[in-house]
Length: 187
Length: 181
Image (cartoon, rainbow over all chains, first blue to last red; front, side, top):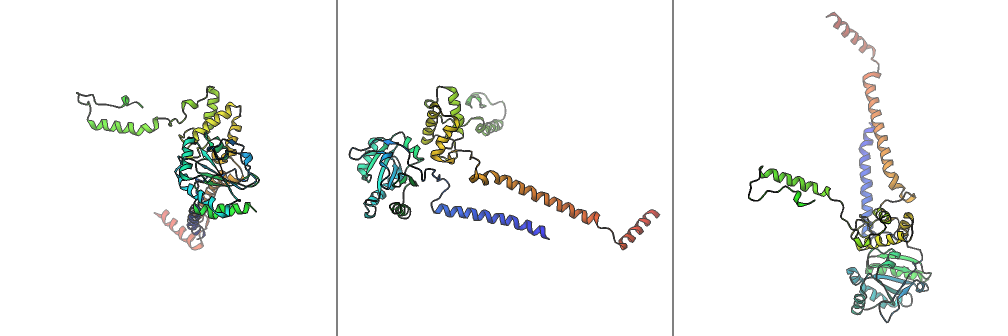
C-alpha cells in the first residue's frame, strides 16, 4: 500500500537530514568555525576612526591615519588575558621570520589594562609590536567589534579590515590563514 | 524571600504537628523559591541615568541586546565586563540624543545582527522566520491527507460497494427468516 511506505520512509528521511546537518556542523567546529564565533560585520570596511596614546616611551601610539600603506595586523591583547599569554611568543616568532620583513606591520592595542601591567608584560615577554597603544576604557575595542581578547584584525594597504582572528592565533592559523593573506594583500 | 517567612519550630516547645509536615512545607517553599525572585540585577547603581525616562528606554533597549560574551543573556542581565561597557555606551548614546533605533544601529554596525536577541526579518533569516510556519503547514497537509484517506477507506468498505447478486439473495433470505420468527 502506497501511503504506508511513505509514512515509514519520511521519518527516516527527516532523521537522515538531521544527522547530516549535525555532522556538517561538527566538521565545521573541528575547522574552527564554532557557533559561538560571531561573524564580523567589519570585514572589507575601513578601520574605525580612533587615536590612542602610546603605552611605552620608545614606540608610538596608534591612530587611524597610521593604517594603510602597509599591510598591518592589529592585535588586541591584555596582560590579564591568559590566551594572549599563549599567543604572544607566536607573534614574536612571526615578526622574526624573514618572509614578513617589510611586508607586515604588527601593532598592538593593550585592551582594558593598567598601563604598568601592560608595560611589565612587554618587558618580560618581549615587544614584537612596531607601535603599541592603550585602550583603557575599551571604547576603540567596541568600535572594532571586539568581544574578547585576544582578537586581531588584518588591515590592507587601503586601510580596510580584511580578516578578523577571534581568539589566539595558533601556528596553523598563522601558516594557513594569516601568511597567505598577507602575501595576497601585498601583491 | 525572607527566612522569617519559613515555618520554624519554636525552641523549647514541641512542634504542634508531626515534623514530617514541616519537612513537606519546607520542600514546597524551596520548590517555589526560584519562581518568586526576579532575575538578578546586573545594572549597577552608578550606571543608572538621572532622567528616569531615558533610563527606562535604556533598560528596554538593553533587554533586546545580546551580551557577546555570554551570548544567551541580554546586556541588561549580564555581569560581564563588556555588557557593562555596552550598557554605559548605550546610555551615552541616548543622552547624546540618539533615537532608540539609532542607538541600536550603532551597536549593529559594530557587532552585526548577532547583537540583537530578536533577529530581523530579511532574506538571510527567511528560513528562520518562515521555517516553523512551513513545517506547521506540512503537518496540517499530512494530517488532512491522512484523515481524508482513512475516511475514504472506511466509506469504501462499509457503504459504497454495492452487494452483489448472491449477497443480496442471502440477505433477503436472512431477513425473511427473521420476520418468520
